[in-house]
Image (cartoon, rainbow, N blue to C red; front, side, top):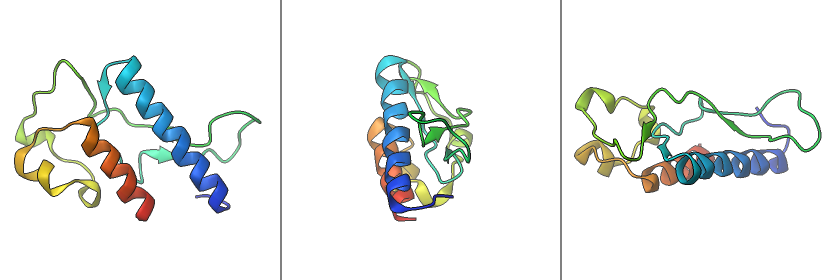
Length: 104
């Protein structure tokens, strides 16, 4: 839950920064962006992140992106049709999922 639009935008900014760091610094593809996996802490100190990514169960190293059909079980409203058809996940799919979560 968020208190105002500024808090929501800052939460998305921080979650996208965390995603960027996972992908470009850690070589991790998140693969499950959804409303359940972006949290806004109730209590935080000044300067701390507002948006936090949780639940990396479906994440994969970028060097190991093999996907089986049973691994494509994510939060349905935030999965792209292209991904459901072809199963090959890229960071672009995750960025699109951020957009769909924002619209949600």
